[in-house]
Image (cartoon, rainbow over all chains, first blue to last red):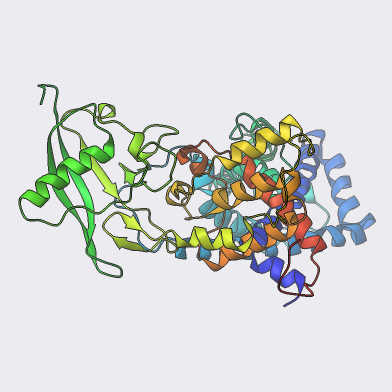
Length: 219
Length: 262
């Protein structure tokens, strides 16, 4: 087996792949969130931004898309395989086990991750390909967003995803620094202010769009 | 016995041998002195069991002063019980209240098979150590004590990690039954000292490989291990292990001979 194969087969190596792909995905999320907020600058500006991504720099867009696809696939496959390994590591459960310092965020990484995966598939079909969109227009991205967030079930599905995203980031960003061996020794290693701020800013920033559209704050 | 004796109900995992079916059995523990250690409480219950012709509850113990790492059971769902940085032998019954119910179970992990009742086989830890948790030092006449300067920061981190007594509480408390904290403590301990440098990266690779072979789970950084560790070993050691593992994997070279140091 080659060195890369051995790295992938090791529980530590696989977790490092998850951390590295996670960092790529968080980087994308920050840019994506900031780009989305241009919705509040009006239809013209937002459609121009959409045209930039879908037309003017489409080659770069495709490089980013492929990078993200590869990252999500590696992140999810590693998560699945590690989960199976972890379940097998304790076949006989405790009659009583009381988590001492586990956070709600750490305990929802797996379920939240599955929700986010389904969300990503829906979201691409919703606003990128238009497959799940009732009135998709290739050039009218602003209108797509206004129509896309006109019903509560879809808005709530998006907000649910952002809830899980904030939890995923709160644990994931903090953990990635440790998995990648970057965190410095600390008196209280469970503290995670950077992750808290990023989780709130990213998930909160994303949530503003469907909320504002549904509440009629964007024209 | 004084009037302050505790009357408790124990729910204890009983299993007659390896690969046998086991179950939780309830025992009363009456008139327990608050001054007893947890293991002395079990001794007292066992005396009663022996007197009445029953099989005593098997549990591991040795030094009973918190340094050998032999004892260790899940007490009310927490490894070594409710007191932080305290082994089961140093846990005292004054921690409990009269009328309490106490759940006592063995460490649960695929890599730690139950031998009997509360006793598990922690040989997997020994094999992780055998894989690289050592230094190969040619012995000769003793060196001058100051011939190898070590920075205080490194000495502190090495000593903190070296406090690991190999009890297995980290594995027991981990939701994934991962041995990351144990393995990382050994890698950090030796990796911060000059004597540990020649084998540092080879050690990280070999110990992590052995940890995986022993069917332990992987680390998800819940932090439960650090909380359960009777020696307060930090998950910062896991950061060190990951860092050494990355460097080791990037620089891995083929071994030309099986034997030899370095």
